[in-house]
Image 1 (cartoon, rainbow, N blue to C red):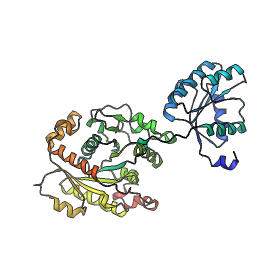
Image 2 (cartoon, one colour):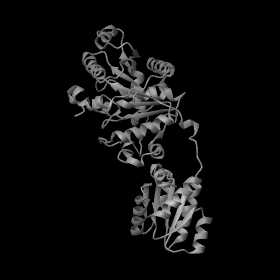
Image 3 (cartoon, rainbow, N blue to C red):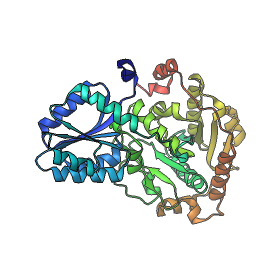
Image 4 (cartoon, rainbow, N blue to C red):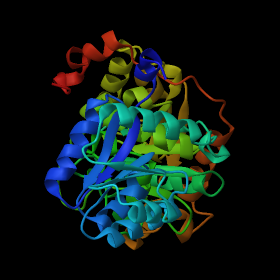
Length: 407
């Protein structure tokens, strides 16, 4: 392999295991010096290493053989059973023919002796990488999902109720994931009677370790088939960067037909997620403060260039006899796309207090029928162009937001 083609090759994801801390550090240092390796995990425990194989999905394992070779060989065998296409390189302290033979019998692809040489590593990578089969991604991971954000004009207008029940209704016919992005106030778990051990907080901060396995490990599967990503039970503001969020969304978009985001009412949250959104349902109530705040949000979306045809006004707890009627709201907001969820307090409160979707209380209630109608329209809607906020627009968000919400 020429130097130029080698340098242009994508990095190899590698997991490094050695019971000796110094030898572990030495192996990692040599691997990184090749500029060909991305260390996706390192440990001195063979037990922990096995769980990292499942979570990190490395392409290569570099396994140190120390004073207890049987422990290392047992790990190699189990790792190969879990991920047969993984390449395993055993690294020993001496060139023992019997030990080398045992390594190959247990599934190793190569045996190297310390001290490692950069040239021999490159040669090993070239040979083993060339032998790796080209595996096409499974068909179910080639879908392109659609992201729908439920955004409240103000607190208490029903965003979580709508997000939970819309997602549940969609999940009856399509692969759907519901994300609780309602920071510090997320109570989505209560709507499904759940006490999750893991949450989105367990993803953020993982950087390059964010992958499909990690996302799946914190996703809860509801009995209805709906997939749920919750907020932590304790009050805690999550910190995620744009790259981490995009990694998670890329994983979800490949796995699900619909991703429903409950983003509460905050402008700061929508700043972070706007580039992932296909459509926004802006939830309002028939009261002047709600309409006033919704109008400010719409002006902001228009200012940053978001296509307002991808915004739907959703009047929750709609009462046709209200003083603030539909024509007044439409005139104030200037949005042609409309949905209404009729006032049905008894069904909604009963569902919330029992931790079940409204459909479980009554399929024929007003709110259940309206949610079902809303889901059917979502299913029938043509694919809209994904909204992308240009770099210059993103940079200008703080000055455009009401009350400088992103600052």
